[in-house]
Image (cartoon, rainbow, N blue to C red):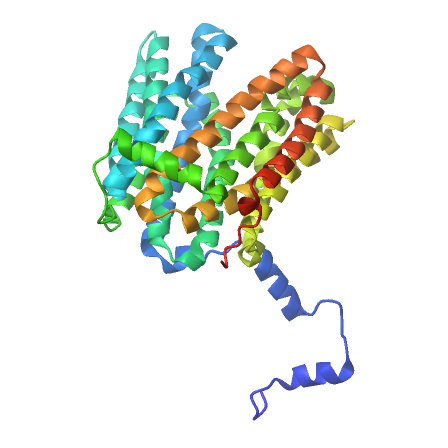
Length: 435
């Protein structure tokens, strides 16, 4: 450095004019802009503990996500029974989400996480015991599915409402990206390991691995500081739930996040058609690739999400990303071969993750702390119903028209629906975090 404090190399570069297209330092800056920001994990102890505990817990839950339907099919030989497992989970999940939201605003959110994690562990132990029986019971699988769905509805609002209490406002974007990274990585690695465990050690040990993961999450939660409710918190009640619904309905930026996500998933969710699509793209061997491609896109978007911190028009970003999801589905539907089909699904998965990051930041920046739990419950309902109804919609259209028509029309209607939502909700489209 010179006496003036200026690097002589900078002055020389100015004198000589433009140099190589990208200098090493410029390349480092570009990579830093793209890379995921791990800052909240370094700086915030409680966020780090929550991240580690939930990463391990999610990993185990994704193992059971594979093992439970596998056992149901193994015991009955019926795909209908496997489908009914998902249907059995829907109603308790939707009902419990509203109750869980009210509880998250009235009680210590860390304590809510502890109670639900412990209950999840007990439910997993029931699956272990059932798998060890000479003749395991199918009804136990349905009962545990209902219990786990209920616990998920009770837990998720407290989990979502915790993060804004553990990081600073300026770190919410990075924290949201890290949470998405945790979920995406678990969604890829958990099922993969679950398949290996089922093939090598059997169902009981597979369920036992899931049970063991809750020990880690409970230990991490115990090490965290308490997160008491806001001073103005009141006991949970129907009136409190209705208050959350009224607040959501009064805010276009919030309604926009729910509506755009539901529109995108309802029209552009073709996963129910993957088995049929696989027959045209190479047979059963490619089915796993079709399911994995959106998750791969989500992971790619997450690990390169550093740039999202420099975007302030979050409402517009959600709309553009949701429309890009639709475009990816159109590419998938029109693809003549497997390569382009997978590329379309990777694009769709990446776009969905970007939309999710910006939706999460809007929620965390605009919802008062005393309402976070109830609004998280509403958000859980929106992202749970969209994919389920979207799979039904795509199946109906495919039966009435054709496979390609169902996929392509869904993607086109997704783009059109997002455009209509943006026009109908101008405050959402114009939402700017700087304001």
